[in-house]
Length: 216
Image (cartoon, rainbow, N blue to C red; front, side, top):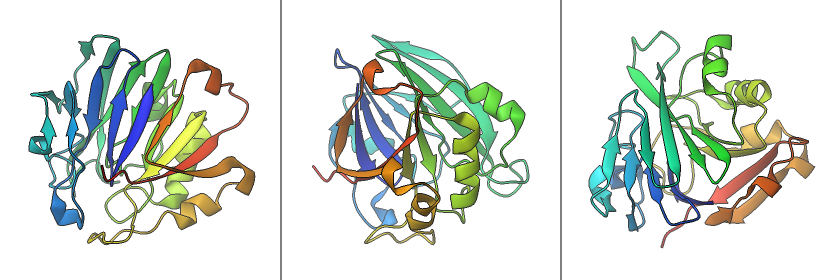
């Protein structure tokens, strides 16, 4: 499968036969624009402008924004209800976590997760090979809480999202603090897109992959 980082919390996930899903497309109000992409489905973790710009995705995709399951050719999608804050949703409402089964890999997009790490939520999320996790704080979990989730989930690959980059208009932190919580030899940086197979997940070590936003 291929994972392309579109910026902010948006990703394009593509299964080996071509089935494509976009997660949390954003509005240009974040400070930069979504690349042009087409997909079979779009997942929306919650209806805030920086996560639900569905019209930016072409291809007449089905929109998933509720706690439900869905199947596409080669892809199984499950949704898990969670909170956008640490007060049970009282401040910012609910957040939907999406899990994708693609090419034998379990990929989890945590959306704008804001709640404390709990055994119940961890058990609902597991197993996870690739974890897409917010790290910028303010509106989501911060670097320290994100590291706790990583330590509890123990994915093979972690890709940080929802952090401050050049041009970002949101009051969130950079990814530096989160990255600093890992050994240097576990962290790598890459442009745009990565491709993963079952051979890349051996369960021995968690890799942190910092992806630069694709602008194409």
